[in-house]
Amino acid sequence: MPRRLPAWTKEQYQDPSVYGVTVMPSGVRLVFRTDARELEFEVLTSTGQLDSDPRPRPTGMLELLVDGVHAGRRQAPVGNVVRMAGPGAAQRLVPGEPGTVRFAGLPAGMKNVELWLPQQTPTELLALRADGEVLAPLPDGRRRWVHHGSSISHCLEADGPTGTWPVVAASFGGVEVINLGQAGNDMLDPYVARTIRDMPADLISLKTGINIVGLATFRLRTFGPAVHGFLDTIRDGHPDTPLLLVSPVSCPALEATPGPVSMGPDGKITALGDPADVARGALSLAVVREELARIVAARRAHDPHLHYRDGRELLGPDEADDLADGLHPTAAAYRRMGKRFAAHAFADDGPFR
Figure 1 (cartoon, one colour):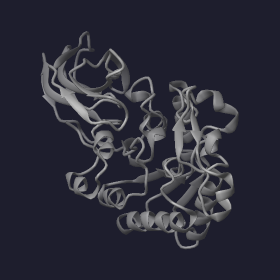
Figure 2 (figure 1 turned 90 degrees about the vertical axis):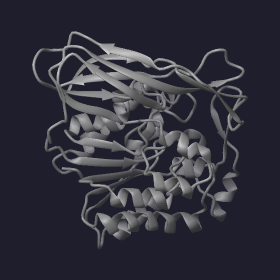
Figure 3 (figure 1 turned 120 degrees about the vertical axis):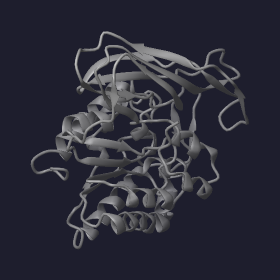
Figure 4 (figure 1 turned 90 degrees about the horizontal axis):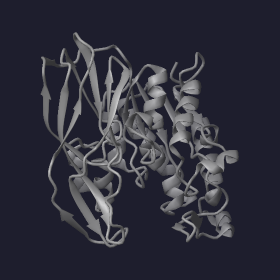
């Protein structure tokens, strides 16, 4: 079962949601060469289910690419079901059975194949069956882009694993993406910074701020030093790697009002903080964007490979209708964000040129 943070990090957090999103394989794919015409993958998924809902949450899609071209998608089968009375309640595992996903009619001859796992569902790969030879992939010369962010980088709401905005951007930029986006857990955690520091990376980006405001985890006094410390740790391992810091996309509820947030009866988030508290150091999205821009401008005097991008240029205030719950973009909006990120980052004069 793929895990998007090293095993050693588990002893450094107590919140079980961190492990839960770490084993959701956003951006994770199995890559190989084969001359097979038919492939079968035996998988065991683990999906959630509220006691008040008779159906498990959607398991998402398995997608197959052949020589970079989309060759099919299949619904991931329901396996284990994790039941709970409500968000944050104790969980009860209902064991399930593995399921088999089959792709047939593939082109003849040796080809490069990628199986993309569903970005929102922990998925164990139990078996690969092929009617031909299966070989390790050859190096393709692409640059490796490592990205970290919140749920808006994890992209649970995307229509498939290749529809997350980092994957869309990577396809336009011709790079290989490693997505360390963690829904609800973009908190400038030191163990994430050390993970990025120690990973091979040709390009790095961080999209931060929305979880910090939404959960009211920092104030202005502590936020700036935490950003500096996160960047310092990454720079210990990647002193000259292009690094793009991206602020939050538009979120009307939190633009001028601090968190924490709550879900209203209309299914949309509302901010519970006091706007007057911003003057005393509480964080709104407007304050976070200003602070991130200030930090990058100050550091660029000795770090010319550090760059800043206002997240509203990926999804702006005039696109609030694309936030179904007032916070998370729709599947179509994620694809649009990917194209916009690529148009900037991979342009001839962009930070990832």
